[in-house]
Length: 118
Image (spheres, rainbow, N blue to C red):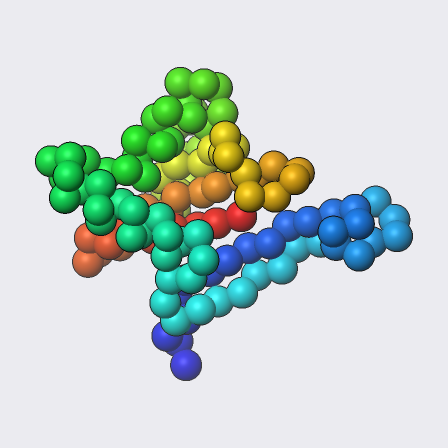
């Protein structure tokens, strides 16, 4: 109890959600450790940091998407999420046909970044 700290949120609509009427469905799942996209990002970020003087790949992704107008500004991000999210962007490479919104959690007291996902 209380060990699930890695959340995954699914938001879908239309036929992929099995809906006969147009309306969104949202589900949340909690896991004890990183899964799926979060696990992949954590692994890629660790490799990137080793090769690029401790730069943060996740923050770089937020900045790149921001330059393209696909990330929330700091002001809008704080308005929407408060201090719980460090970055939010509409990804250039969605894994689903309808697009994908990613949210990057803030670093925990232990210095580990918490990732929030679509």
